[in-house]
Image (cartoon, rainbow, N blue to C red; front, top):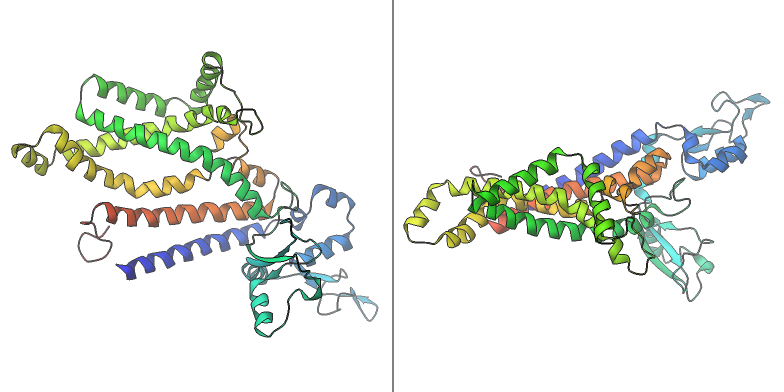
Length: 391
């Protein structure tokens, strides 16, 4: 079991790294102009552009002419007289992974010291092992050196801010709203799904089925509009999210309700389906023949077995809540993760796109992995290894 878990874990890590590499290669096919802000494109000379690209590791000095642009008075044929040549994508990818963990210097107030360049963790450890101080005399007594995860800086959308800092701020907002809505939808969906299965083909079941059909058939934007108008008209709820409001919790109500609507319908549908499947099995008939009440059968046997398939996707759903909802967050002006990826793509902010894709890939893959483990905890009869009954 432990061997299989470790195997699946490392497989998940390899898949995440593969996704990152593919995205990295695709983004490096974009023109180099996308590594500059709009102001830099207008003001920078070609020499300044080449210098910045060299600092970013995208270009390097020409080895033939030593960056002079000419050899014996003639333009260098290798760099076409520019003095810089493009670095290979593999070399850039190597730098990306090498600098993924950095040692940064912060002052007593917790702000990063901009005058001291970060050092990647491998060079830091190497110099420390030799007894050298990576930051030399620049490190004052009240300065602190901290290990930070690094995905570069935002180029256009959030200028000069670390991608990890941007994602952390956006993620906290999306996670706050998403986790509350997930808890509500999970509780309501499972309870109503159980009641639908318990009173199958009766009035409550018909009402629940109608709700599920309407939610899945009507476009979500129409439902969100109705909820927003009804909430503002009858309950006086704010129509837009505002963290600076006197009561910011009220501004979260409508986004949470909208997020819960669709998820509740999904949990109702699948809980009812799995419950009905379990109710038709022989062991349920045997339990009833032994004298167990309907409530004992439903909650002691049926619900436990019916919840196993739902549990497989529960960690995946929880992790993806931090990714936000594009429609809901855009509709209610929530500054979360939902619209961030589309905005980053629209502004060609390559580093931010790469960081968000890495986040989504990690959450999706690890969510499936954790879901498999959760199934074995809920139902010990399920084994992840072996020749028979492999899940």
